[in-house]
Image (cartoon, rainbow, N blue to C red; front, top):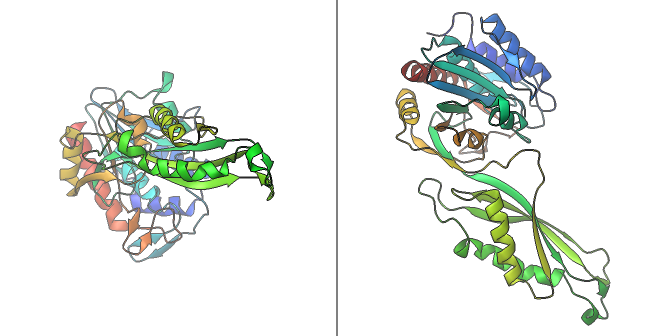
Length: 361
């Protein structure tokens, strides 16, 4: 049964009303106060994570999601059983269901609620939960995201980098005296499209094939001068077993071989304080996935966006689950102006999570 002192739908409404697109302080205070009022003993660690634990035995299950949202803030609205507003499904709907299940459980093992502050940016909170003295070391992780009540056992990773082509500047009237980096862009972009034919990890059984796209380009300083350098960014959606470092090394080798011999190619990954969100895959027949699928009466499938679940998957079975959807027949939902979630879906997610914790913890 749901904890009698907690109403997930009322909490969700208050959470969506609480802006957390620039600063999560107010949203974190709401979460901490809610947990404390319900009899839990929450704490906030040095990375800004909100943590609460029940039980002390084994197995140890972790319920994770995030309280930050993308900008801009979209005000709360309710139309019958539909709640609209920023964070309605990403991820305050999943948060309400996870909090409900956490407060209702009476585990023989241990259940930890771990809510991160910056999933939409650099995931420093999740990184702190998976390394050093703050590592959670659990037997399974349920990560709250909008999945339409399906259980997602895999997701592609996302790497971002810059490809730089370096030549030598010269007067455009004397092109033989320089090396035109812009003219090298054509063969290099053509080679980019062929990268996975020879260097890619291949098609994954669950996630399919990886993707690699050029997204922005920059170069040249004067209209009468050969550009000494041209650069473009690349977006990589990876599948196992590819890693960020392995991708970088293979890409520079591949593109350098395709570039004119007098052009130098450099590939740099975007600097960030935490590891990239890499691809992960959990067996669909694991106890965690199978139990939650049965409880939710949903399907097993991949998650279509990168997620902090990738940080936890290296430690144990990890699934992504929650009410709401990333997109529907009309287009984008999460991160869009029309973001919404259906209230019965929050209740259904909470019920499935309660049943799963009762069975496994």
